[in-house]
Image 1 (tube, rainbow, N blue to C red):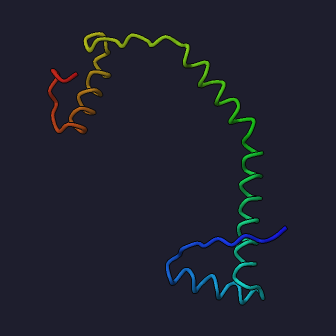
Image 2 (cartoon, rainbow, N blue to C red):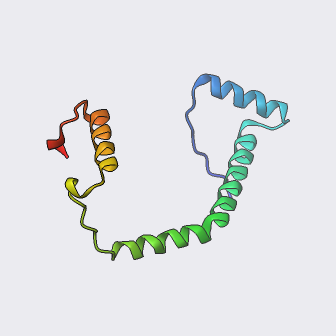
Length: 103
């Protein structure tokens, strides 16, 4: 199979570092870059395989959650005194105001 050329762009300092590392490894830049890309793809594939079962469970959980009805939020007055104080602190932090009318 014939090789196909493609070009990548890097900052000059990165390019110099790649050239130096390739030379140290006794490789030309193309071989060095291909080896690096193949190694990264192997790590990506291993990570994908390691997390495949969890990703599937997450997808299923998200699909299941899409069918759940939204819960009604309690009114401000229905909150405990501690939770009302927490709401005021969060509003003051986020809005720079403690106005209960915002809640």
